[in-house]
Length: 162
Ligand SMILES: Nc1ncnc2c1ncn2[C@@H]1O[C@H](COP(=O)(O)OP(=O)(O)OP(=O)(O)O)[C@@H](O)[C@H]1O
Ligand SMILES: Nc1nc2c(c(=O)[nH]1)N=C(CO)CN2
Image (cartoon, rainbow, N blue to C red; front, side, top):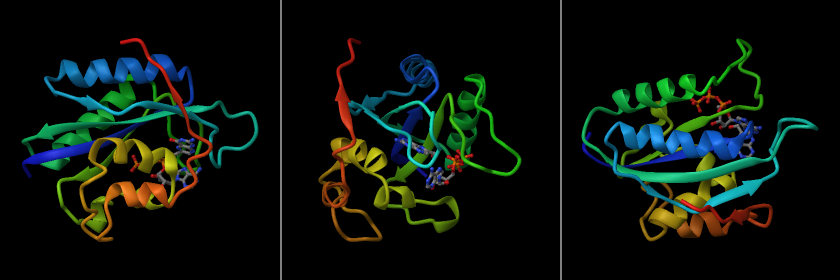
């Protein structure tokens, strides 16, 4: 599949470091990233004591199969020491890289467009910053309209000196 993709980036363990270096890692692969603003928000669903997340989204052209991109994202997560529990239980993470949108593709098995776009402002808002005027291929609304339905009051935009 050729075309633009959007990847969500999140971290709640040393998040400034992991998010900044994850973007460097992706750029080092030759990817020309357009990056949304960065947002800080309390961790959802990880219990008391979990650190705040930083979330953002990155848009870039991907000319190869999506399976190759998924594998690349997984490798970068692992290089950042991302751990997963065998139970699949949600835990704090050094780095989460999620493929959220791939052009107009609808593929439920690949979770495209990603269902979290309709659930969480920390996912939908940075995507809307990048492709807000594009139409969600399943829902028929724009990504900006989708983000506007969610409570974004918990998101604090943070200034980054790059
Ligand atoms: N705290 C949470 N509350 C609600 N849903 C959650 C929470 N944490 C994770 N999920 C859901 O579970 C999915 C997978 O969780 P997680 O990100 O921990 O796994 P993963 O190994 O990174 O999987 P993938 O990379 O395929 O998304 C998330 O995309 C989200 O839809
Ligand atoms: N604020 C915020 N909370 C979360 C996030 C995230 O990216 N941001 N990711 C999770 C697991 O995917 C669980 N909770």
